[in-house]
Image (tube, rainbow, N blue to C red; front, side):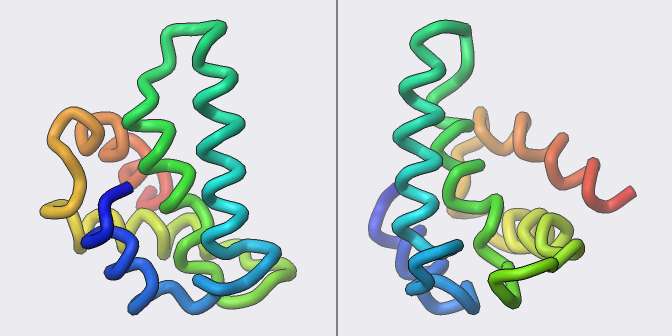
Length: 99
């Protein structure tokens, strides 16, 4: 994840510094996803974006059923920060949460 993307997340993510659902968690999700991708044809670029976006708009550490929708909306607002190939796959993520 490049510094411009991290900076945008730091500005907009309510729990960016959280030890539970913040950037440290996102990095662990990315590392685990990349490890698992060795055993299938998963795209590490898409895994990386998902890892950083899946909890980026959480408003609390507990039950937050709308955090996925807000994460998808964040991704849509910041499409310019997401590479096209990954955006095609993440577009499915956005559409899923907007239905």
